[in-house]
Amino acid sequence: MPGRTDGPLVLCPLGVEALSVRLGLRGGHVVRAGLRARRRAAVRSALRVWPSAPVVVVGVAAATTEAACPGDLVVPDVVRSPAGTRRCPSAGSLAAVLRDDRRVRSTVHTGALVESPRLVRHVRADADAVALDMESGLLLDLVDDGREVAVLRAVVDTPRRPLLSVATVAAGAAALAALRACGPALRTWAATVARGKNDSVVKEVRQPWACRCTRA
Image (cartoon, rainbow, N blue to C red):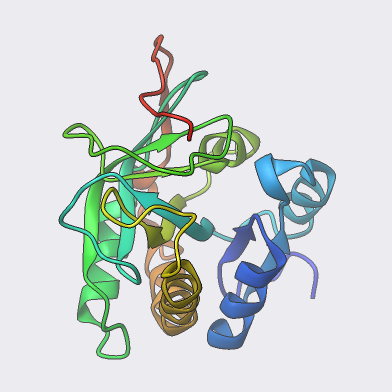
């Protein structure tokens, strides 16, 4: 039913990510946002149809910390992009729900996530961030109506395991399985923040920032 809030509105860049989330979520609303948020019209339409649903950006990412392994989860409290910095106060509640859910067996990392404008085939370790993706900042920019927003990413490649390697297929499968396992926790998080925790609105802090990444 349009407008009904019975779960989160999940924005996934890729179809394979959206499929994995749908299999685990069993409810809510999953929208394929496209690589680099190219399907903005679909996202804006979904935001209008479900105006009260908490939003979570979900997909895979590269870890920029050597403490992370493929299949680990990243819940950033800060998303940095060339356009500025987005703070996600709901990150703490989502990370806590994921850690408390016995179906989620992945390690959950928190910290800063970096948005890169291009594919990075071999990430470098970065003491100031835990992961890198290509569209979380772009998608957060579309959600400007004050609703609850969070980001959840599953790790595929790491500084020690570059994207173009023989281990990528297994690492990708582990990441997608981790996203599928998060479905019930995402529903729990959405129900929790929808009960009136209005102090968890994403706040924007505009500031220059240079993306620390390398191209292969």
